[in-house]
Length: 299
Image (cartoon, rainbow, N blue to C red; front, side, top):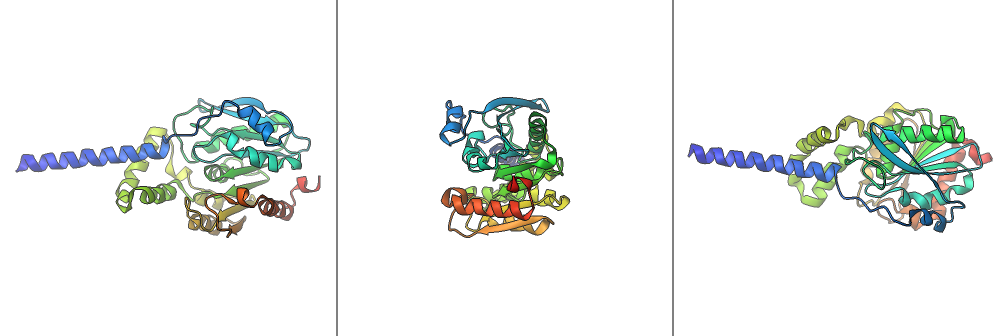
């Protein structure tokens, strides 16, 4: 009997550890979209005037590759794409804001596109990459950090907010549909995909993810980062978001001192307003930039 119980306990422990490892892999090493072979041509198809300049920075030993689009004004924008995507996923937004005349950087997050790295850390390490990309743009276009805004979608929106801990003096952040923390999105998606029982694995999965990818969970939490900044943040989120719950945006908005929160009630899904109603979406951005007195608005 003792041997039987021991075997059962060992099997349970192995199963628990195996499940935790699996969920940590789903979190930090999920499959991503392949980088398209005709990526540069896609930029021209979006109506961007000139093909991009490809460049890379090294962040903690990881190569982060991006594109630079030269502008005509003394302002800059850094674009951050969503989870599993790559820099081509924000080309439509780059094109939409091209009339501002800003110098632009769009880059592949670590573990995505043509950037190096194996793991995704939900902004904990990506904020370092974003800082380096922003500083590269400052040098390349001779800009001050206060002349540059960060524009992120979903995973990229969260990283943009988290970067404020490192680049606190940027002009603004436009954050479309971020999660409130890696714990919150991991818990929600785990339950959505596998059921309530997955809650047993959240803590050990996050612990394993931290050890495997060498990051701290507390650094992957926009809801905490936004409390430490006075940089203007435009936060947009679909009320009916079926991927990142609207309540997570509400938590970020409630925590921030300088957040302009615009709930989107258009019947859309996750980060869908830009595609559903680009004119209204752009009007929200223009109103925000005018409200904060960003100088590109009068250039």
